[in-house]
Image 1 (cartoon, helix red, strand yellow):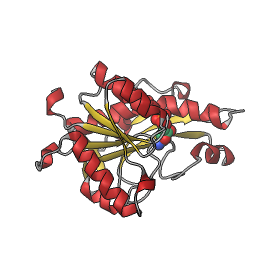
Image 2 (tube, rainbow, N blue to C red; image 1 turned 120 degrees about the vertical axis):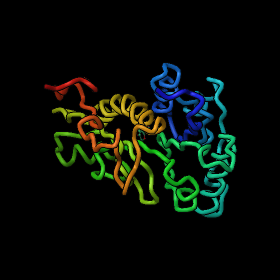
Image 3 (cartoon, rainbow, N blue to C red; image 1 turned 45 degrees about the horizontal axis):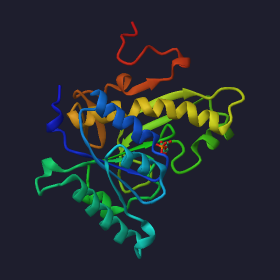
Image 4 (cartoon, rainbow, N blue to C red; image 1 turned 30 degrees about the vertical axis):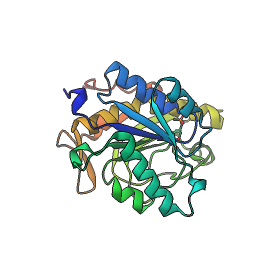
Amino acid sequence: MQNRTSCAPLVVLISGRGSNLRSLVQATASGELQCEVAGVISNRGDAPGLAWAAGKGLATQVVDHRDYADRATFDFALADAVNAMAGSTADPADAPWVVLAGFMRILGEPFVSRHQGRIVNIHPSLLPLYPGLHTHRQALADRALLHGATVHLVTARLDHGPILAQAIAPVLAGDSEDALADRVLAMEHRLYPLALQWLVSGRARVEGGRVLLDERDAIEERILLHPLLGGTPYGADPT
Ligand code: GRF
């Protein structure tokens, strides 16, 4: 098992309420996620998650996209802020993990290339379905039976990149957008710490654009089922 101090720091990027941030911080406290959160950066000074983080004594910073002339300048400033917050040295082993948790700005090549292979995102859909916004609304409009969330490595293409893990939840009769969002969010809170721990511990790695867990595809271990789907609990032997 990985020792806390050998994990590179996590820098969490948010824009809003920060419920995934809270679940990640709780997971570091419980030891499920064996890393330290170096701090939280938001592009919005009024993000409720930022106030929560400050109240917990975490370092916080605002990098407001409106203060920059264009996307690239914002990307460079954000990349610098991440490194400064993590206290990064020139040693690549020291490179922080950049954890997107409801960060509502598209990150372009300047940012992605600076933090290549170290940026992780959670998206509320079963990618590649429904990249972008209003995923729950789209699932309902499509009369989908299944919906969910995806944790993936970030590339410069929106909501795209090697998939680490997915959580699957049912769409129930009469679901409102909010009811479906809440069901998926509860799964997100379980999925993100789990998938991040695989990554930071080296259990999961990317090879040729796909994710290997313990050197295997291990698809069955990388799917988390909502209890209503009758799946065996994560890690249990289904046979
Ligand atoms: C989550 O649904 C996440 O998947 C998406 O943005 C939402 C953020 O929610 N990327 P919160 O701020 O973590 O509560």
